[in-house]
Image (cartoon, rainbow, N blue to C red; front, side):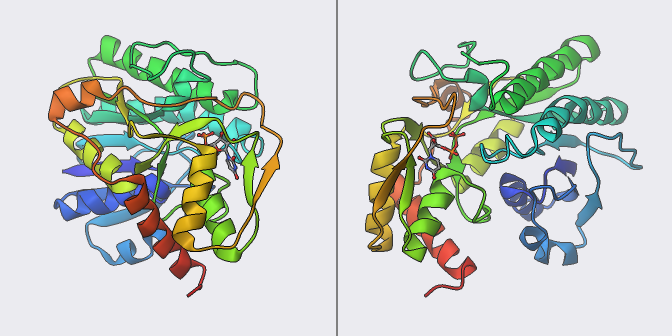
Length: 312
Ligand code: UDP
């Protein structure tokens, strides 16, 4: 198949490109490198089935030839990016989604939206099933991301209803693994880099907020399986293993053998207090369940960061 992936040079995008190339597809990777990395795709540029289009998907994109899938993964996604790129984030979720749906419609392609657990905001129920409508502050610092993902979902369903576009919508919960930016500010990369460099691990608040961390390979497996199932979504993908941020910090210190200490910093505004997906739907639809434990995933990620940072 010919598959267009926006954000194809980003953390998840790179893993997705690689996996779909392995399955003998042709990939058109669209990225404007705001937060994507050229290093992530350097080796892929030699692959004849991989084509890079350097383009900002908030502007229209016209490409010739057949396209079977448009997969919209582009967006800065770390809370550290939210105050830095709020307008770019809103644009890629709204205008970017609109352009991608336009391509899907013109090419009679299927459309796959990478949405986020952020549509649930600071949830009042746990775990969060897909039916839960969320608790989002529409004008807070995180709103650029939360609301643009919510708008992206609304637009995707509008195209599905009005133009009969075949769609898949996933809500991605916290994921981690190799190819994350070392300075992207997210908790897993922050803690690992801080521990490896011997700095203090920075916990925001008292560290009692929870997240459920999914290793990237499990997430990509879920995506690929979902592509084959006829269900528009939305569908949660992530793990049900919920940890406090304090537990995560202790695990990272233990697994790196670091002498780092923990430092407590103020809690950012609107930081969700808990997050755990209800995964029944994905399990029922295609028997998917994440396999990699937090400990196994962290070990792999720590090894990758060690190499990346040139540490022994
Ligand atoms: N966090 C933290 N220290 C850090 C980075 C993040 O304590 O150095 C916390 C953050 O406040 C949040 C959780 O870890 O409660 C997950 O943050 P992340 O930025 O990874 O993504 P989020 O799940 O909030 O989108």
